[in-house]
Image 1 (cartoon, helix red, strand yellow):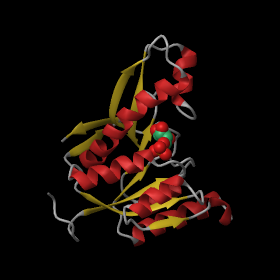
Image 2 (cartoon, helix red, strand yellow):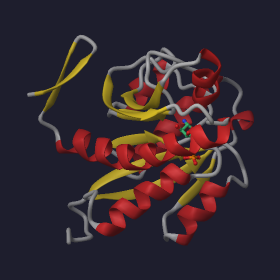
Image 3 (cartoon, protein in one colour):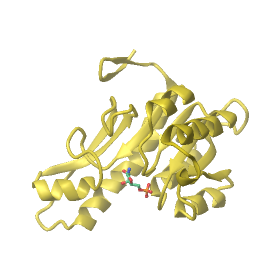
Image 4 (cartoon, helix red, strand yellow):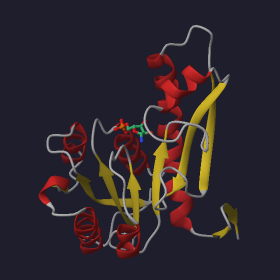
Length: 207
Ligand code: GRF
């Protein structure tokens, strides 16, 4: 088991909703599969279920409702400051339903990862599973990517595919994708924290 202590890498997780991907991170840390400490979980939505999951795991929680700030940039700077104050060196967006500006990325300064329920660049934006079903693709999946100011468009760290079945409904497909998200996200966070990677244009490559 990795030791809990000051030497562990500190990450911050941003959430807005149910928090199942946050739970996957908490569980991976608990099992010793992800050698990191979740320093803080921040929600822009008061009462998000993800906050209860964090509190149950003894993780500091913070609610920063974006409407309390006068501008998007001011909010993003406050968010970055809260993360830096807690020593976070990587940020994970786990169902954080708000676009971040370049101001956030510059102010935070470290890698920011997002998990998205489609095989990007197909179906960015809302409801990846619904878009996949409507388009009639035979293979769907999820993507973990580095966040850039463009929505769902940053360099891809990892992807996982699932079949689309003839009898799939939105819920059955979304559930099959979610299983893969929960596996992929902790792995990708560990991969980025471990280093030994570089970007060649858009390509995330081993050093
Ligand atoms: C996930 O499908 C994730 O890919 C997307 O938002 C959803 C969040 O779910 N970005 P949860 O809050 O982690 O359960």
